[in-house]
Length: 161
Image 1 (cartoon, helix red, strand yellow):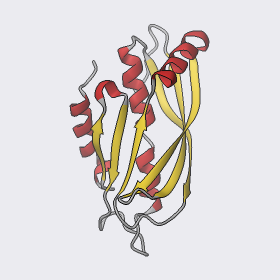
Image 2 (image 1 turned 180 degrees about the vertical axis):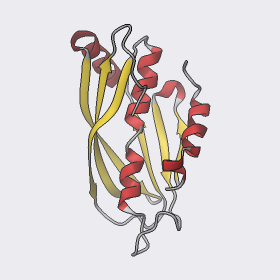
Image 3 (image 1 turned 90 degrees about the horizontal axis):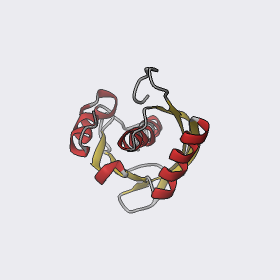
Image 4 (image 1 turned 60 degrees about the horizontal axis):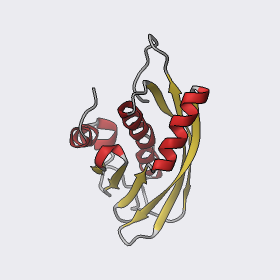
């Protein structure tokens, strides 16, 4: 079953690991082609110098490529196991205000994934992300490597990690 963009938005907004770190999905784009995320600065995620804790920023980047690819590929008839294989982050300046990022899955990205899944059965690729403050200045860059495996009929697996 595929949930709507709005339902998934609210489910993730209330998901405790995101909720308590003040990580909020602002919007899933139509057809799960992208997501807009806000990390609100609060008492729950401030570090000793008053900026957003780096672990909060890092964890905010974690689930979204896997979630987007899972729902996009499900719409295309794939049964997959999708997870974040690896990630890295570079902190460029302190996040002293709320932070934002957007992830978009283009037709080219989706076609590359589906083609590789059909021919090889798995797809692994790293994607860059930029996390900006409310003035549009880049505070951190992240690289997330997504792993997608095309499950064969009869094979069970979780939807996304």
